[in-house]
Each structure stands twice: as structure tokens, then as C-alpha cells.
Image 1 (cartoon, rainbow, N blue to C red):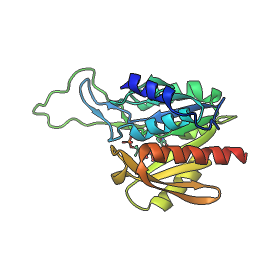
Image 2 (tube, protein in one colour; image 1 turned 90 degrees about the vertical axis):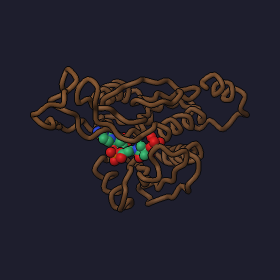
Image 3 (cartoon, protein in one colour; image 1 turned 120 degrees about the vertical axis):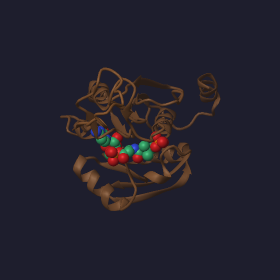
Image 4 (tube, rainbow, N blue to C red; image 1 turned 180 degrees about the vertical axis):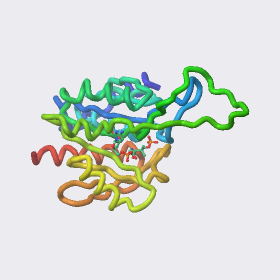
Length: 230
Ligand code: PMT
């Protein structure tokens, strides 16, 4: 699959390269927070949206690094990939690269909590009943990148099940980022298509439902537009 994608990438007629010379850092996929050596807490992100955004950025001429949680996907042609498992690992991998990046796009569905009392063996079902799992908050990767002294242009994602506009606008303000792409979780996770509403200083912009590749290309076009006005 990767060889076919690379060949297709090489044979494709040249597209405009508005991100030539730009370094784009993208998180994608879920994180996995271990409970014991065989179980963990994760979510339903397949990585498809994040990988499509990475491919669109590479097509626009950027040099792209994907910091990826566990997925079954092939790395898009022209992108580098750093594999991580937990939110803490994702944070460390991103913070090591963000200061050298021009654009950061957080597409990953990062677990909000990790297990503090993680067991170093498989927990056994016994008469004591279900184990008590103690949780602690994970670092907010996107907010930390946005707070860097010279932050890259930051784009966040928000998957909501209701009140999309209200929650997305609040999230954009809280994280202090110029652009946030909101989608409905029940119509986005794991699917090949998606629809986005983009929130920025000018208001909201609808990206109609289409394949994740097409939606990702439109998102990158919007990023290029906003960056050209900086
Ligand atoms: O992977 P797919 O199956 O294609 O599905 C795509 C998707 C639904 C996962 C994707 O489109 C999406 O919406 N990703 C964000 C999921 C989400 O709900 O994020 P959030 O609301 O928890 O976080 C908001 C933003 O902060 C996101 O950019 C997230 O990457 C970032 N974040 C969140 C928590 C945290 N600890 N660190 C972060 O960087």
C-alpha cells in the first residue's frame, strides 16, 4: 500500500505548493492509557482524519511529521511518522518538535486521563470484586504548544456529540488558538467521510461532507489563507 501510494504521489500532475518550505507537525489517532499489562483506556479514533490532513499538507509542499497513536494505517507518502502510545509520550514527542514547526495541527483524540495505579501484571478477577482505577489528568498538548514563546500556527479539532458551535467556540478560546475544526463525533470517528465547521476570528465556515481526503484539502486551503493574512 505504501509503495502504491508513493508511486501515485510521484506520478500525480503537479499541484500548487503553497506550503513549500513550511514544517507541519500533526497529531493523529487515539492514545492508549494502560490499566495493566493487557488492558487500557482508549477511544474510537482510527487516525483517518489526521492522516488525511497530513497527506493534504504534504501535497501542498510542506515537510510533515505525524505523531501518531496506535492505528492500522500506512504512513502517507512524503510524511515522516513518530509512533507513540500514551498521551504523555505524545506530549513529549510534540514538545520536542513544536518549536521548530511552522504549523501544528492537533487531530488526535487524546485521552484526558491516565491510570495512576497501573498494574505491572495482568489483574486477576478474584473475590475482592472489580479493581478501583484511579485517574489523573493528562497534559493538554495543544494548549502547551499554543503557549510556547513563538508558537507555530495552531489548529485544533473538536469532536462533540451535541452543541457543536457553543462547545467548539469555547474550546478555541480556552486553548488560545486561531483556528478550530469541529466535527460531530458520531459522524466522524472511523468513517471515510466527514464534515467540518471551521471557527476562526472571522466567524465560522462550513466544509461540506465529503471524503476525509477532500475535507482535509479544504482545511489546509483555509490554513494557507489565514497564514497569508498574518
Ligand atoms: O481518527 P478518525 O476516526 O478519522 O476520527 C477523527 C476525529 C473525530 C478523532 C477527529 O476529527 C477529531 O475530532 N479529533 C479531536 C478529538 C477531540 O475530541 O478532541 P478534544 O475535544 O478532546 O480536544 C480538543 C483539541 O485538543 C484536539 O485538537 C486535541 O488533539 C487536543 N488535545 C486534547 C487533549 C489533550 N490532552 N491534548 C490535546 O492536544
